[in-house]
Image 1 (cartoon, rainbow, N blue to C red):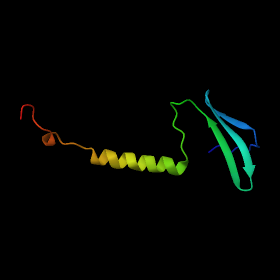
Image 2 (tube, helix red, strand yellow; image 1 turned 90 degrees about the vertical axis):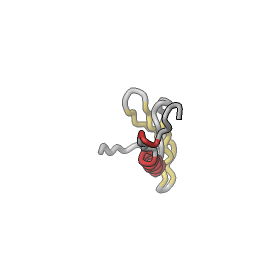
Image 3 (cartoon, rainbow, N blue to C red; image 1 turned 30 degrees about the vertical axis):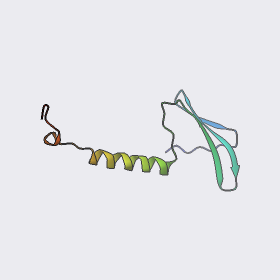
Length: 74
């Protein structure tokens, strides 16, 4: 893990097109802005975990056995 120190209004660049900027620091809270292409999903960690869990559950329940499918003309 790379650990960096930044002050308000300073940024970190990830790859050619993602910028993470420290917008404000108040006590123990830091406001961060992320500028990334629309094709890049940006989520808080807890939201990403919920999405991942939901996707895993959907994948397990979406398994279809070919014998469960209706036969053409039947």
